[in-house]
Length: 112
Length: 113
Image (tube, rainbow over all chains, first blue to last red; front, side, top):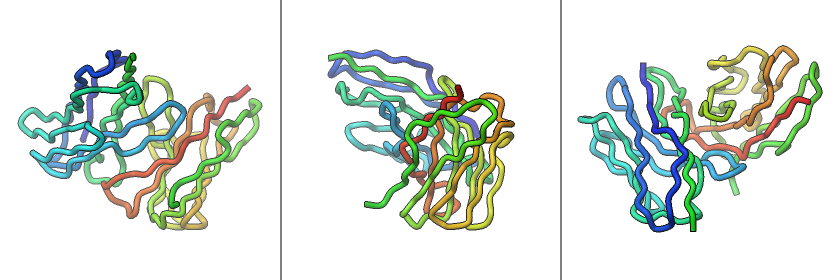
């Protein structure tokens, strides 16, 4: 079945640093891929998504490209801010179901 | 504004008591989900419902129960049979049982004393 592996955190960066959070997947076919973000004490919210191979999702300066060759969907941002401090989850649907698989989450802390 | 509300934000319960967590959505979504979040374990699916009056067990349904009598409501009961109920509980919905975006509520943190 489908699965997702996400880099462990925490990741600590200085403001304006470059961010990469790795996510690799195994999947039957080419399901949509998602990044969700969870700010402290809140629920998850969609950050970006890509619905087919080679698509790039982007939002709020974050980007991720659906790469079927490397089965990856790494999250990147060129210049992080303190307000980006949160937990980031990679996710994809389970094969043949309407259920999701979420990665274990990567905590990002950005220092001023 | 449309969205998902969960109440209460914080909930305390004595061991051996049942407790019900509320989840309401005004997004007119058919599908609703309950997840449990523990540190370092990501989200685990408890129950989900694709349509009113129907629901299915997720990966960790033991010790939990749900109902779906109305489209907009999907309450979760944590029973005394749940051995380790202290966790953060998240409700989510999606427009249709699909593999598209899920919309999450703010969560309820349950602590068993």
